[in-house]
Length: 281
Length: 249
Ligand SMILES: Nc1ncnc2c1ncn2[C@@H]1O[C@H](COP(=O)(O)OP(=O)(O)OP(=O)(O)O)[C@@H](O)[C@H]1O
Ligand SMILES: [Mg+2]
Image 1 (cartoon, each protein chain N blue to C red):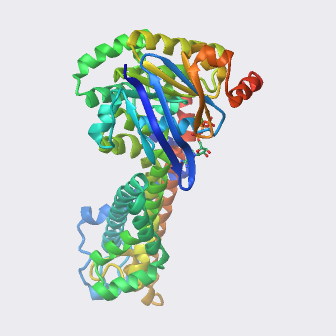
Image 2 (cartoon, rainbow over the protein chains, first blue to last red):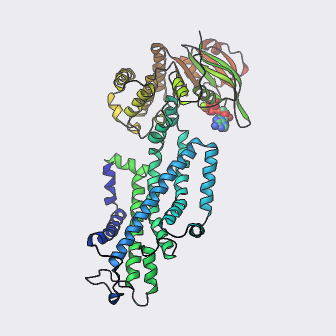
């Protein structure tokens, strides 16, 4: 099992993904380690190019971009992990229940999933913001509503298929407690694909958050977000490229890195390639 | 003596389609009972109903004279009476659990101390010719034949009064078929078990069944002592079935 994880290093994309994510994580943590204040204004130093004092330059108010991008990256990564984990967990629980117990529960859950995914994400965003205003909390709820249905559908169809497999029926006929059946015999057989889907969604959520914040619907200033940083950068693009380059570059590294890692994980967790690896071990 | 399985006036349907039609059948305790019939005649459906995996529209099915409900407590009570033997043994073992964990689940269900269960298990493993080492393995790490015997061992741990097998020999070559049937027959005698075997393979029934019921389109058309039915089939369908064999098997 552990030997399987070393296969990330054997894969070229896996190594690249690890490198990119390593750099992004380093940047995210650098703000905490260096302790620069992302909100300290220093007008004389506005829109400075990278220097020893300001590694990534400064923005239009002379705030240190390393600190700001670092904070934005931390926020993007925590939000992405939080949203993906919550969506996957809720989707797994609801989808598995719908797939196993069927009948009206399945009908209701499917209807909710279909309704949620029928809404274009932006329309849903506008309506939620109109109702509850902008803010981190609104954004998290919105994102969970948008990302949960795919996990739910996957869990539901997997659970439906498993429900009639001989081994599940054998457990039932033995009198094993339904909760044990779900936790020990159903979920472990669903978890693999759900984890892969979660990994593939991390870059999507990062981009989604940046996009909404860019439009002013996501994380609100003064809290920094890669999206607002890119927007601010855009406004002063004619005066300096540095704010845009730093924030957009970080976003690119984060999405590319997490995509590459997720794809490598998917290949490793693929049952066929897994048995292949064990056969060689 | 009460019948091991007593089916009376059972009808089962899927939507508008009736698959089992007002069927009654008694399986005497201690026998090896074969149910034969062509594909689609409803054999599997009937067996699933006896196991409690399939609801009935009308009628009732008693096991050792008792009726069972659908609650967990009732399922557990039923589990001590009847256990299945699945056609595909590997598919009947949960793929992400070690065999030992699957065996220990029985202790949980029975409320039996794990040590006492492991003692009984040792005995059963020895009888089935399984090494203890398989307990630490996952289902995909043991052979198909071992998986089949592991599934049977697990069923035996429940000390059931009835073993119900749906096409237990499908996909096996003839010598392995014989071995499995001998094992089942032996278990029936030593463990005092009623064996219900459902198959479209007449050779299997002829080899081990004391009694046989012939099924056609959801009804029993003929039943009796196996030798008698095979020697002097009364019903036209049985004759047809006998004539078409061995061509079909
Ligand atoms: N879940 C189901 N939904 C709808 N129809 C079903 C279902 N299960 C079985 N049937 C139908 O019931 C009839 C009897 O099926 P069953 O599986 O009991 O036959 P069988 O005698 O076991 O056949 P075989 O020898 O091929 O296994 C078939 O016509 C089948 O299409
Ligand atoms: Mg069948």
